[in-house]
Length: 158
Image 1 (tube, rainbow, N blue to C red):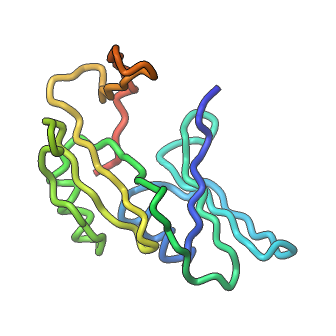
Image 2: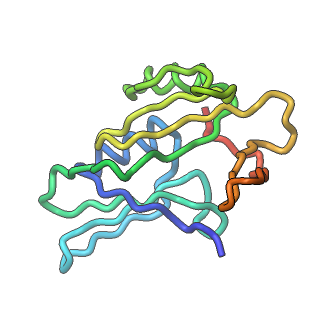
């Protein structure tokens, strides 16, 4: 089993595609209109859907605003140089809502940007000298043991 995609409802598909493709460097993998259902799906990501999790941007025709609620957190992207990534995002018109720096109560260097719909995107800097890529600590259900999952050394193309 693996994660295939995360779906986000978007207010304006063209603005969203510009942000995810032009600002964050993702590629438009596929897009299809569903006239009978009055919606369009666009899939974006950093690689082929058969090998990578992607984002599904759903545009419901005629809907120009969503209440994001308080349950949604953020999407996370790995980057090699977070300071450079934030400068490039700003130069392309992206909105950095939290400048790069260590996370609260930790040492991982993070930043946040916001897409045109108000969704938060976290940038996480790869730790120097870590040949295995990004390490994410998880607390087990019993909250007594920590385990580490190593993800492949992939990062957003900044």
